[in-house]
Image (tube, rainbow, N blue to C red; front, side, top):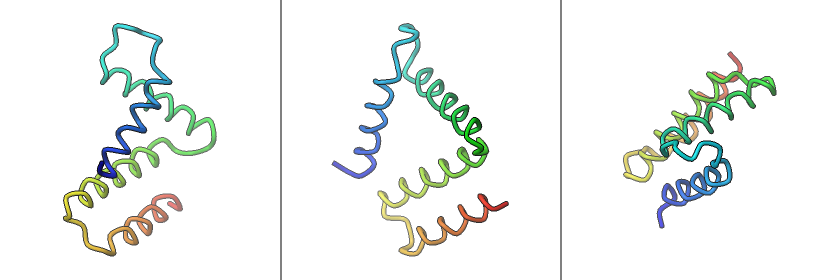
Length: 89
């Protein structure tokens, strides 16, 4: 199983634990609801939701590129640097 397949499996387990409030919701609806609630949790703990969204997208893109073999070896270092810049304003 690929690393991204394992990540998706962990997300599926988290979503399964979270779901159950609205039986008629689609998978997409449940994913959005979980993400929104996580953003509320972030804000409640002094973390800017835009930072979370930005970093999540960067990490997702990097992981997809890594699995496809398109990423340069030092990309993680660049990603970490960018994350620190975003975090520190």
